[in-house]
Image (cartoon, rainbow, N blue to C red; front, top):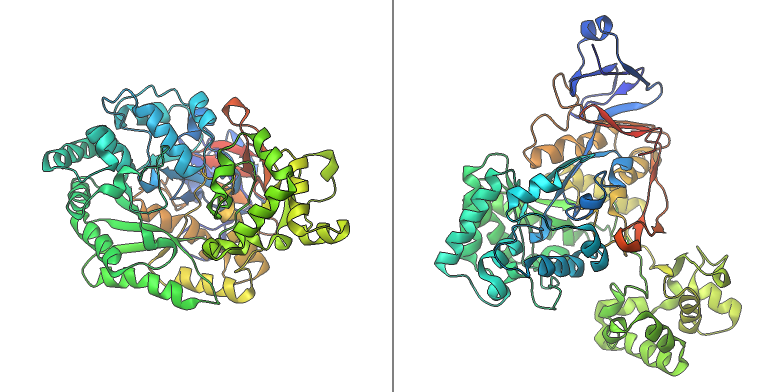
Amino acid sequence: MLDVLIEGGTLVDGTGAAPRRADVGVRDGRVVLDRAALRAEEPRQRIDAGGLVVAPGFVDVHTHYDAQIMWDPAALPSPLHGVTTVIGGNCGFTLAPLGDDHDASDWLARMFARVEGVPLDALRAGVDWAWHDFGSWLARAGAGLGVNAGFLVGHSALRRSVMGADAARREATGAEVSHMCRLLHGALASGGLGLSTSQAPTHHDGSGEPVPSRAAGHDELIALASCLRDHDGTGIEIVLAGCLSRLSGDEADLMADMSVAAGRTVNWNVLAVSADRPEVHRHQLEASRRGAARGASVVALTLPYPMRVRLSFLTGAILEGLPGWGGIFGLDVDERIALLSDRGRRRELADAARSPAAGMLGVLARWDRLTIAETFAAANDGLARRTVGDIAAERGVDAFDALCDVVVADGLRTGLVPPRHGESDADWALRVEVMRGGGVVVGGSDAGAHLDMMCGAVYTTTLLAEAVRERALMPVEEAVHLLSDVPARLCGLVGRGRLVDGADADVVVFDLDGAAPEPERTVADLPGGAARLYAGAVGIPHVLVGGVAVVTDGVP
């Protein structure tokens, strides 16, 4: 007997083949497409997919759900956007192994909070740290999940578990590297999907020190990469100083060296594409071509849209980088409100933000161009979706004064959006061209991280809404292929990414005429009452994981 019959829909199977009318059955968690079996077996449940697309569940290869699944095993909102498989443990940051250091759990929590923007109070309230090695962490993390989840092994956690407090301060000895390799072998044997590491100068732990992986030398990185040769279906993820700007020749060579040593693909995050500066992405993709010439496999992750962030005077992300501003975000909320209410101190902050020392961040000091995304106080009703410049003109005040007045009234919670770039027709067309050109995988959402700045889970529905429906830049079968089959192959996942006979029944049913992300909003649903940015989806009524419904009628 079939468990589920999805009938009347248009099958887009993930291979890139043209859509076709076909029913899809599910038996014991596997896909059944055989017509005779579908006719002969009565299903326990029927899903009417008339007028809808039936596709393999999407695979998000770069998330940071490591902590969230402890209190939210559904990994919301990703399934609402058609994602059935999430890969965590990226950028060298995992919650295991803990090692013998009694302070390891607190150190890992503070590092995760600092780098990935997950409130520390939520981590302390929602994570029980009831594990020791990577295998016991996987067993704990996998209990009762509503999505498929896989995790890379974080280099910084490995280093800390072997070297303790010295992990961020020096290169490892030969004996210490051997110890890390033994731990990595054990972690991969227990189910780890590969190695992740970071050399990014922006990554610091909770005390402000560089994360441990940044202290690793070339030989250590190659030794760890070599461990992957003994473990099928594994890969490497890396973040480098040049990933967001310009990869150096040494960085390209490092990725190639690691790929050759591992016999595996290295992916890096994230490739920015802009029609205004096409030379940037062309240079970045030279790393793939340079690696291929040496027998390496190096790919870039890229998003279908330019980076979208929200600013807040409550958390200070990005704003704290303005000269003279860092100290104000170390103050408690009441002290910060008092400071921002003082017009003299406002002038000091505004002048500092416009100084040459602000560098690229100085563009934020054009306060009139910020848009109010969300307000919370009655005094600010009606201001959402208006620019600070419009509000300032209406009130007859300076733009920064208008901004501070709104922010103070909201208790600092106001959501602010900088002007968006890279949204032109030319930008979208170029991004689609790059997605098709090789050396690139669609991903890099950071879902589960940077919760005060963005909700990265929307990348799948954004691609369907913008590139397929609104702009007609690619057919639906190509978009589904890029969101399912390609990332599944990158991660070495067997039986996922395609709807073929016998595959795992990870299925998304969506309305091509309506699938889209909802607007971001603030929800206080984290442990301890902490808040995050959240965006649901429309036009995705059904999602199944292993044949089990995790979204029905658009509701988790």
